[in-house]
Image (cartoon, helix red, strand yellow):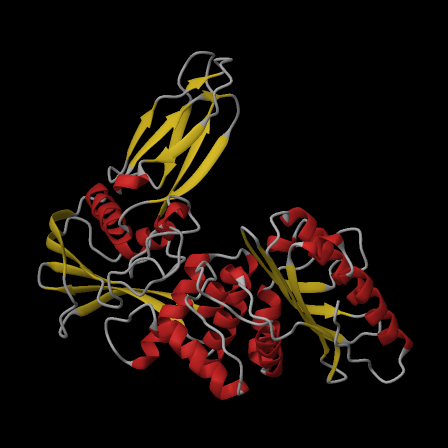
Length: 445
């Protein structure tokens, strides 16, 4: 196994680091899978360890580190995603801004700006921010109907998803079902039975192959179960719920249609979503919609409407080329890492980590948003009994055959290390995470 190792002078700790990482790389895990590993001491400004740092790998959700960093630098840490309610005559206009965190509470606050008893001729949706392509290139079609792959549009309510909760009832009786938000936009067909003893697996699924919004419950319900699934299409779901909530407040709505907001429309209400909240959700919980929203808002910097999906990745790549002078070939296909077409090297990711760390405002937002080992987000259940407990802030990335980790580590000497681990080709992701945790333990010792 060929290694390229950079030691810090004759430091004993650096030698131990190299020796221990060498031993970890001599693992049976790599008989049939690949790994790239890169460690850099930010305080000493020195490379500590490098293995296949230029190898292109699928990054999975670690790509969100690139998206978040470029978005915070180019858009600014004070940037907001603003959903507006406008009025002209007897018509209302909702101008979508692809706010990924817009929820039912936000909707009710917006509706409260409309006087009770109002008569609305037409409720318009302005979806001109982006084109109608709701998925990124290289996304897997069979990842729908789950929440991590919503149908993206400028108007997203509850992430474009409905949450279905089921509780078993008396034996032989259908389980109790509750859906949030409630709406006639979808239909629930409850074909399940509580505690029947049949052993049939209990499932909650949407008829997604036909883009149908019929949600079916089947099988033997023996305990509480919750599923969150996307609905098609997101903008129609948003508008349907809004029209229903207006009606519930005694506000009459004639029709629902789609059109751009007229220049002379009057602003009634605005929901401002701070970019820092979107970044936090994208990194801490690895939310794909939040990452894609950041990408689209970056794409809007080109000044062209509608924003096309490729514009965000193009801007990110251009920014990295300019800022980091990256000589390598690589490809950024989306903002979330869902795409099968995205390929990055450990070196590119490390340079992105260093860039984020060099900008004080960006650094503060990024580190506060990253999962912390044993404490929060996607690292909550990792490294609780190791030297790395609470000392790792890192972004995880996981899809079948891919497991990545990149972020910052607090070393025993008080230095901050930036590191990237990219495992590709292994189907035993539990074993890979265990191996990555050993690396993190070494870094913090």
